[in-house]
Image (cartoon, rainbow, N blue to C red; front, side, top):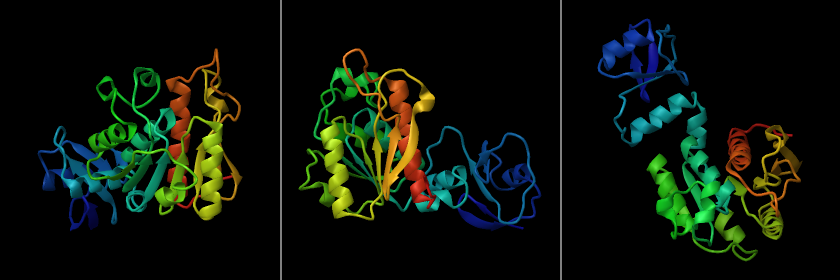
Length: 267
């Protein structure tokens, strides 16, 4: 029988996953079969993808790639790891999106923001006390590196304008707009849709407060423009931005990126 073990094609006579582990890596505990981590034995079939790992040991680059490939189910990670994704703005949405994309194993992240981290950011943004005073690009690159040190991060510590947006994000496969200001949201949408008409743009709109989680949706507004949020919950006096709904919307946006990279049609 032919199976792939930790990214390497193997011939085996083992009939089950546990038998294969005993044959190849008897001292290892983690076993992922075709994208699912198993704790009970399961039969093997020709063409199966298996990852066998050791708890508490950081893998090298190739083994981590194999682990991500196994955990994301065969075929998904190969496509995601070749992608370049842009994140414009690294506040509540952008910092969380970048971390999610790092966990997905996106091969290259292009991030941009001009701001520094201050204490009021910590209620919803993916930063820590130790990051206060550092630029958001530097702190985000640090976080991504902690999650997966093999992801390439291209950081632009500047304000995005109509004059530089296309140059910064033009070679991305997908871009996430994660600004606070409606003016800046409109600016980058208009700039990229006009200058890079084939480039998918995923935007956030309507995520303030602690309202209905199920009101946050992903909607296709026009060709290559997707909007995540409820569309009306704006931050204002008496209605702040808090981590649960910000995180839900960031998850919608990261998942929209994944679906686009996988070629799914979204409505």
